[in-house]
Image (cartoon, rainbow, N blue to C red; front, side):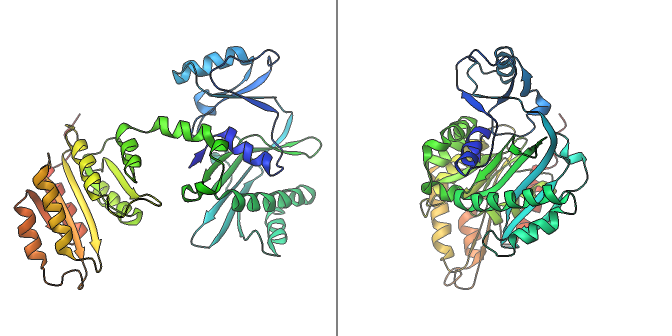
Length: 380
């Protein structure tokens, strides 16, 4: 779950991290006394500064301008008191699943153009490791004077422990402002919380983020969430893709893209969702396939021990109730146990009888057949 800057800073304040003085406006006008303010749109997207959604000046004037840019007269805004910043620092932490640790990135040249600057310092740490402070100090002294490196090392350790307490997958502060007296203040905050850990936290503390996330969803995405799985619509897609599991879905997404047949959607299981959502996934995919720009439906899954016959019979029953509006390509990779008493040849015959265009175990072969059938994208 992506957090707005406001919700992210609420978490920072809860753990004693300094942030600028500010207030949140929902649909109301800016109050008096904010003639010189930093006004920030509260959205779940990056690049706000480059889009004119973060400005400094008269809050009343800027609030109207930013809401006009968003085409939303009630868009939530964060008002903050300006700071005299001596240095803008980039600081970010993320969970590195491969290393089973937190990766820290820090640059002495932060701000809006941080991507164009020199590569940041990088190192890994474990928040509870006795060497974590020394490891951070050693890394930071490569880019900062000793006194500032020491303060940053202490801050990094606090943020690492905050990430554990708040179940964050990533946390970015850009800029982290150094004032003339050496004070460090988080002037921005981008945070992503593990959705599976949401039950451990007060929903009211992230109500703004949840409301914006819901408002940004398409009707189909909202229906998928209500039915117990995740779906993301993808712009410019030609293939309504039905999958289960993020890794398998990402593989098929890449194969379709490489073949010039980009997916129109991505599906994944939801934490704590129902065990079987295939009928609901097909219903949404077929609805998407009614669109003229979507030219095929692709379903791919793997079976280790679950009987192939049961999956094919369930799919065939669904297709008898509602045939696919576009050519349907099915991929079923089945292990030895799954094939007991039922061959892939029989599965192909049974599915062909209900309108399946092709059945393949090899995902590469399946995508090649799909690409050959729908052909290259027509010129605009």
